[in-house]
Length: 89
Image (spheres, helix red, strand yellow):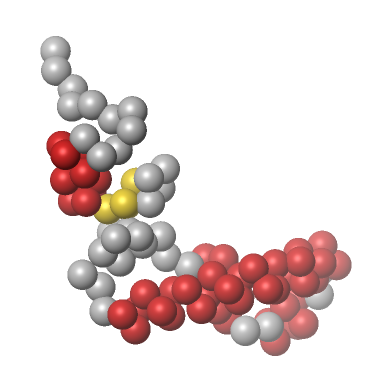
């Protein structure tokens, strides 16, 4: 499981992205890169990491479910993910 501080940092980044999204879009359209540079770094959407909602794992995530591959497999085998079945052919 990811450290709580890393998960919290990512949540703060998400809030900043949401807060500055409109302003960043305006500045990009105007071509004012000097003002864009003065905004907080973490307000850029590229700094947000997709993380598993259960464990906080930052790699191997299924964006559709918001889960990492390990938790996805575990929950799918337990039948807790609607519409997901193990393949057989």
